[in-house]
Amino acid sequence: MRLKTYNADTVQAALKLARIELGEDAVLIGSNENSNSTTGAKLRVTFGTDFSDDEQPTVIPGAQSKVEPVDVTSNAPTVTTPPNEQPILDELRRLRSDLDSIRAAPRQVGAAESAFTPVFENHLIGRLFVQLVTRGVSPTLAARLAAELEAEAEPDASYHSLLDQLYSRVRSLWRIRSQPVGDAGCGTVAVVGPAGAGKTSVLAKIAMLRGVALGKSLGFVCVDPYRVGGVDHLEAYAGLMDAPLRLVDRPEELPTAIDEIRSASEAPDLLLLDTAGYSLKDSASQRALHDALRHCGDLDVHLTLSATSRSEDIRRGFDAFGASADSLIFTRLDEASAPGALLDESLRFGLPIAYVTAGQRTAHDLLPADLDELTMLAVGGAETESALA
Ligand SMILES: Nc1nc2c(ncn2[C@@H]2O[C@H](COP(=O)(O)OP(=O)(O)O)[C@@H](O)[C@H]2O)c(=O)[nH]1
Ligand SMILES: [Mg+2]
Image (tube, protein in one colour):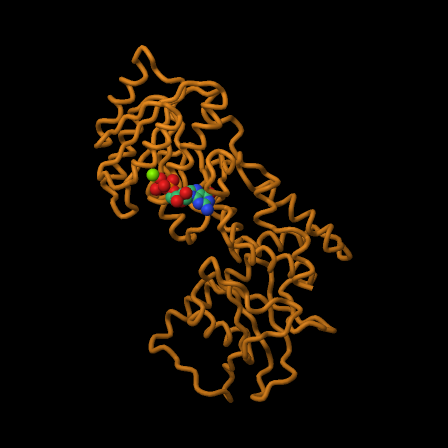
């Protein structure tokens, strides 16, 4: 997340520039009276926006901004106005609906010891809002959660009791998968998703936990139309587990290949299907894969997405492969700097989360989705309090 503060006479004037500079996701964080303005601007107005995963906020409530506020008053140096005002009017309309939705018109609170007036009347809730956004939850969802919290919280609730309430709310939002993957080590488990998302690694981990560990026989299939997807890894895993691997060139051949494996006299208990070489841009191949999977009988298909990807890429991954999937697996939690974004994504997709992975070691880093752990990822612990104090 990135925060930026503007000196302005009105919130709207500051917004005009914030939406141009920070983009349409810019969300009002707070405003306060500007007692030290050299240009006579009445307000200091702060906006936040999502940027790349590894960006950290430059300003937090209770701390003086390290960034010089930008002046947008009439006394300030000229701000270039775009030739066409229409986009700005549209932005203003969007702001109004944002503000309605988060029930948070800027309020002047009395003795403001902090540099910012929180949008939320209860400043502890404002801190929890920032805590969520810092964890990667979108400002829109964070504002909704904070507004719900504000509506139900006792006015004198402590930070810890508010945090508990927030935990309960966030915990109730996740959907996790209830039935185990690979029913008692049987059936066919497939992984789909963008190249590099961790599909082959996930499949090997599932093979270990749901096959080898249960004493089941295994078989692997890989469909890779371009033979660029790193089949070597899968070959190595299959060799290690002493399991046969069948390579299939085209998705159209997949139903027959799977049928043959299943009906062979030594059919494996657990069949693991890897899909490789599918680019996010190649919608024809994605469609062919989707059609083929529909004709493969009983399949348990997992959409594998990297938690380190930008939200936009995660969404593209879902658009490309989500239609075939029964559940989600988020990989690379160990490297994700803003894991709270997964809350937004999983809500948007509506699929249950089966597993997360948090490392490259086979098996040990495949963790069944757990409501408390996912909630902790999105909300963070109470220790964040001291960082914000
Ligand atoms: N740090 C980390 N690396 C992972 C994780 N899962 C997979 N990887 C690595 O990501 C890379 C791509 O994984 P791979 O399974 O080949 O992706 P695929 O192209 O979707 O099959 C490999 O180097 C994996 O070791 C994870 O949870 N954490
Ligand atoms: Mg692979």
